[in-house]
Length: 249
Image (cartoon, rainbow, N blue to C red; front, side):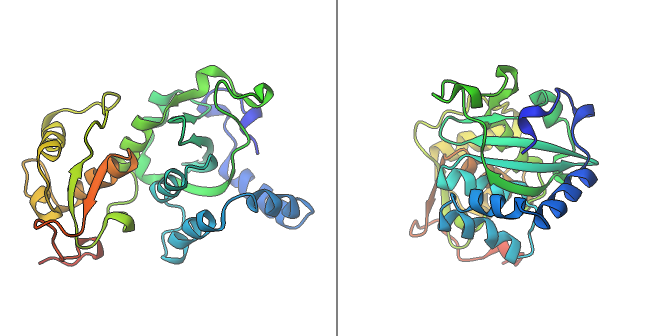
């Protein structure tokens, strides 16, 4: 909606209050029909996926929206509230890219746990190399998707397992997963190495050095968003203790 005209840099991003007013005004005008038409291009399953978290009382979850985007391999434009500003972020799951009108280092320096999704719509921009050249953004605004997903999983607002990987399960990293774009060190790097070698459940991971229940869940969410997590419901290590609902054994 605003992405192609936003100047570079956080200081010039639209204020959240102005963006919300625009949404309200659009809902009272003919623009509402245009918006409904754009949303109709999304598959019913994706729309249900996006609405599911809102129905569960998790409206505004960035990790949840990204998980749906990746699961359905659909380009989406997410309008994220960061303090008083709105950051438009277009996600290209197939190309493993994200478009954001601020430097990646600057975006990742934001308090990611406070980010929330104000609005979602089909992407208007296209990835580099697309045949619709007029719809390609400035090259410096495209960034690798992997670090964004990883940091949001580790530091975002969601501290519980995503539903798709919760419940009775054991986990292992998929063979050949490339994590070279992630800055892994210390206990996190050791945990990744363990999951590359062995299958473990949530309770085991939570007891590893440097880990607890929440950090273990964030690790698993991060690996899932990287499309690199193997989830087994029948492995002997799978546990039926549902920590994702907050219950402990």
